[in-house]
Amino acid sequence: MQRGKEVYDTIMLALSPRQPALLFVATSQGGFRSTGGCQHWEVLVGPLGGRPVLAFAFDPATPTRLYAGTFGFGVFRSEDGGRTWRAASRGLVPK
Image (cartoon, rainbow, N blue to C red):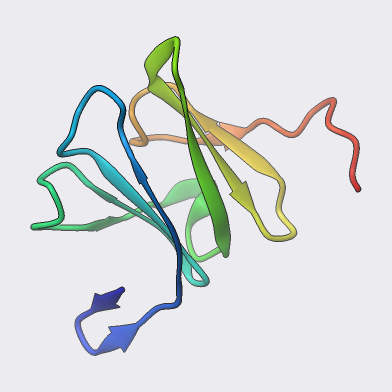
């Protein structure tokens, strides 16, 4: 993924199962969100800001809920389609 003159290693792309224009990209430099079908991207801020994101997963029962797995910082959950994030690693056993 390229943002301005910066190029990031793209790890994965996640598409919303119910909103085709909503996409998330996991990169080595953080997560990005597009609500316009890849036309414009916004950097995910808050606890995900600048942290390497390895994966995104949508909750099939609740389309506005998704999870982000990071490298070394745990799992985060969003209840509002990726606008805000909070830690969700409690109860998970580190491998």
